[in-house]
View 1 (cartoon, helix red, strand yellow):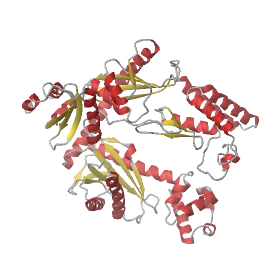
View 2 (tube, one colour):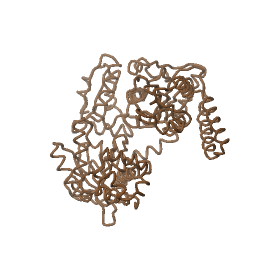
View 3 (cartoon, rainbow, N blue to C red):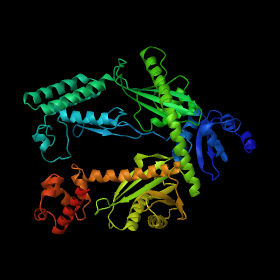
View 4 (cartoon, one colour):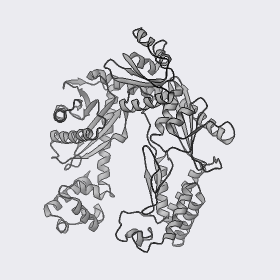
Length: 588
């Protein structure tokens, strides 16, 4: 009733509307063909689930009138990107998928790429997407193993790969361009769906290894052949053309939207992706927004198949490709299969998602109220560690609306003294948020530190110097190193009930940042990460690191070298420092 007079003034025109909470923060953005009908619908009927929660938090609304539905759609997309509203239908798993990228110049090379806002790249050809990143990496590794592609960054002299027959000698002036072209044609043919070429190549290598009694290598390639057969078995659907197309199937029920996407490349079904998420909007608008957001992060194909209830003209104006609803034959069957998979995905997953959503969203809201924050969308968590006993690192993880946002994770090598918790926290907070200010990236609503008053004071001091007003809280442990309380914004200790959803929510975030820090250490000390290990030793810069790698090739050989031997390349005190560091990480 409190909006009755304002609602009467909303025009019957297309546009975008924005819902605001008690603090004037935009918590939801939508679009409508008819603003009056859509906005009124939030207040003149009963709602359930997440929509009821949204309506409960609406204290005001505003809107922008558009001249067309397409214009309204574009306004909606831009406002969602700008304000990242808490209750919006998307921004959940809208990630980009990996592609296999073939680079032809200055030399042929394969790599895994993820592009946002994909456009045509000079001298690059993309294959995919691959929803299974492992499959993409395995295919690239196999092709690199079978073909003499460029594998190093050396551009001045012939390297080891050339001498063992795994490179054509791209640094040589006598490079055989005919061999390069032949190899390129075979690789591209396979990536476009001709698996016979790669299978024949594998069989040829297996025979060579077998003839030379190298049965271990032959067995490894046999396993790769089996994998290729499995991958190709999944591509039985063949539309007998060479077009790239995506097929979207949507299923909506009880406030949840399930989506299934089929990826068809060169006429063959090469992969699929399922998603399920809370939907607060009209299901048609939700589906259209999903598609528009999807193609800001993934390659746009020649055709997109969608059901007839979606507005194909609007989608074509925003995405700039052909949207089609097939009516018969194999193509119609493919669309029907996508719709069926979306429904099955809903039936299999929505109960689990509903329970998880209740736990996560409820705990996030409880934390917001406990800390008296106006909103709590993004949380940055920090964990400072000196697990090796000598050198410190720090890790940051990000949770948005209660869920980990892994592309925002960051890791830091700390240069201050390892035992100085105060200055360690100051260093990482300064580096993180000074850069965020320079690059104008999103700031958090809350910073959570793994520690008590000391870490909180350190973070607040740096934030104050930077002119930033960001809430800081801490997670404090008892004498058994178990988290037992939350240090609030006034630095008062709030005991946590270990049986509560809030406790499990906070410890899940704490475990995630600790896991990320541990994995960083493991990466550094892994056998193949000699450069990363040397980066952590004070006094070893780029030149000394290069000299050590050139002579010793591995961490194991550096460990075996005496301080006197190392002192021929680096000063003795740094050699001692290096040996002590290697000893400490080995003990871990």
